Image (tube, rainbow, N blue to C red):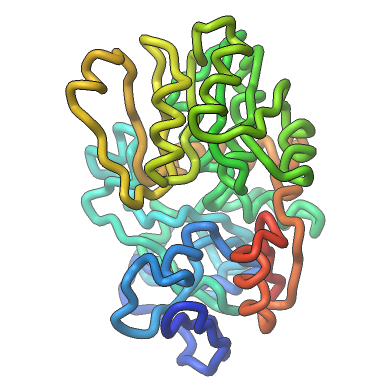
Length: 338
């Protein structure tokens, strides 16, 4: 089969690789219905993460179970499943505490920008739907695999409460899903920080009440103006740069929580400044598996439509164009149909 490999900065190839096989009794093989390009894929694509050997790309996935190992009991051949980008057994102490992304057997999914993918620890990682979903729901189920779950975790980590004021730093797919999550959690005011009209429009559709186009100190000042000098009760940091983290910290009120899910690049924090600011931080790789059953129910019941975040759909063979479109900000998020 052909699959996506990254050889170096901006060198994405769709080339022949061996089909995945069951390697352990706890594995499953799925035939993907759709996959996509993630914002985090752009870090190595842009050369900001080192590439020492060709990388099998893709960690967001949904599809039909093709084969299961002898120890797999919770999913079976022919079922439609969604899985997290973090592989977990869902039984270890960290999993039971709701942090499956710190599972004692944690792996990170790879190789999902392909027709077939191997999923380790299938019982703990995959969640099946009761029946095969309608085709128009596939984008939303795919979003649940990572960006929806990550945006949801950002809002949960930031302790979004009914009626609260929430600021969302970042207008990529995860930031937009953070807006959707804050709306579902009952936030009274959701301030989305975005400079781009198409992303602003989608943020408003997902539940944003205010748009702030300024960045840095000007953006912080604008949020302070909107909140009468108080700042936001909860802040979602969905980028991972030093500027975005500083912006998140400075627009949060004392006592606020910042849920940070952007993979940090060049972020350093001053301990004394953080101490006296009295603002909390919770983040890291999202425990998507904690939220997956609830999010899949919301999608199946058509209560949310996170699939709208995919504003470019391409055949899997055109994956390199999908990367370029996101890198050049011509697309928020590229879905790849298999």
